[in-house]
Length: 177
Image (cartoon, rainbow, N blue to C red; front, side, top):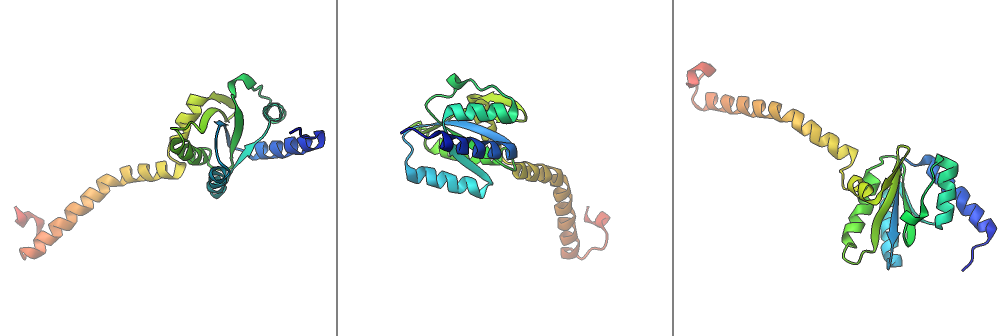
């Protein structure tokens, strides 16, 4: 079904607005995805401050040229292409899309075919690799846990030594030996 020129201009303006606020963009090739599956994906992406848009590839190319000054090669975007546009944490939203991509891997319903982050176009493999990374909050929690591990061990040692002292009715740690 043909889309009118006015409707294309509206879609282009909306896409450019979304791209101006984006921290990262992933291109996915979608096939045989049901309306229910897309609705669930969109709901999960909205919860992470991201959106999923399916727009004509020529409009995507024009919007990228206007907003980022980047020339997209449309031959690298096979089939029907959707954009996962992240606003906020650039990686966490890609992780949501990656979760669905893994679920649908057998049927190849959604495959990463490219991406754009920090002024650089990426191929599908690089975008997929980024999508598998944990979010910033998870990485910070792991770092904090690693930093706190020695302190936790020392605290457990002192706690055990204190319990030994009271159990044996001693007053000094030196008497435990």
